[in-house]
Length: 89
Image 1: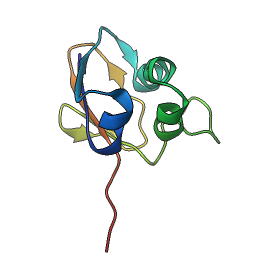
Image 2: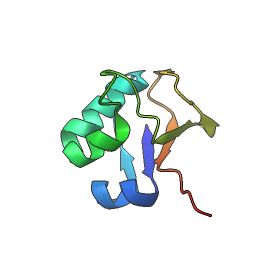
Image 3: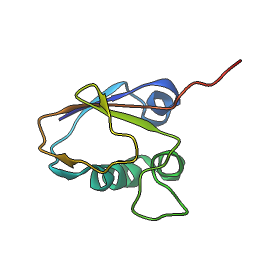
Image 4: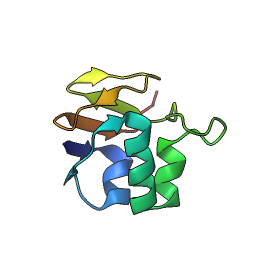
């Protein structure tokens, strides 16, 4: 699958796109990425108050669809976009 990192996540990972072989739940993928790229990424991707859940602070689009708080099953052929929402005013 192809992972595209935008906004502040790109700087943490060190690249905009990563190819990875993975099939399973989204949260499992987020755990793998957190282990590979460190605690800073973990704090943004995973909810530290509810272990095993995606953080509300990160947006994940699977094939262009926002997963919200869901934990979809990934087949391994998808394109995912991961980014931090930009707030302002």
